[in-house]
Length: 371
Image (tube, rainbow, N blue to C red):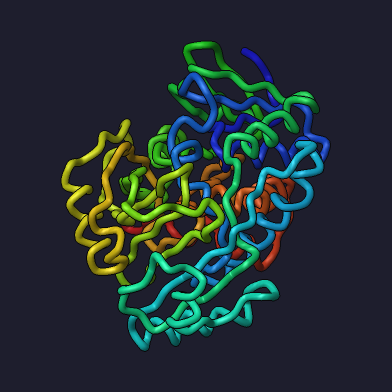
């Protein structure tokens, strides 16, 4: 039986950022277990790399601003180069109530954010001509992140301080041992530890069940992304554009565009395949949201799983019944942007800190009682 201070299940953004912050706090014997052969194989490595803070939920928006600030400043210093391309974002509204909701976010966004009329948007981005909308929130502080560099930075920061990462190492069992310890069994061996961090993304419910947690299941949802070439020349400096009413977005990717129909179909925690119907959904949404992109030629498609709690709030903190078992899951597609803040919170929770912030994301709210 090997020993560890902390075993973290999952080497995506949630697990890697938690390891990074724990190592910074002086925790040395950290073991990260990853079922795949590389880190970030699933959602952490397949997302659109959008670093944005225009999030309706204020608690998540606060974490996103903290995460973006880390990416723009400290991560750049640690990497020795910028891993962030500032391009700004436009969050578009076509309905009055949506526009009102978007404008209500402005006081909570970083300086420079503003409400742009449709005419102002058209002048900045002619490709949107012909679209029917009222205006948009312009957030100049947003941009595109080098997601692989960010994930590597977290893992390197942890391993340089003594953490170890094991790949191709799925968790088979988690059991309570004598005293204040948990035992984690894998095909590569077993570890006795004081704490286990469940950062398994779409597999978080499965890991929770192995530990005997009473939490309600988290739900993986499949989302598709596409790369396509429009008939209009793409300017690589365009901001990313998200239509809040139609719920679809695009951003420059090389000489083409990366796009998503923002589908969120419940999906088992297995490798997601692409669904041909998602292309039809994208075409239908582009026709309504961005008519000039309606004849886009699709060159590439893939799918990933984003995971949600029943109330769609993050799940960060100690399990209410399994001593030493901590959740860092249900990040709902915001894991990359918020990762630095999520890792900080997870490390704080593991080290016994309490705060209003942690209370908001506490797993205790999800306990299934009376069943």
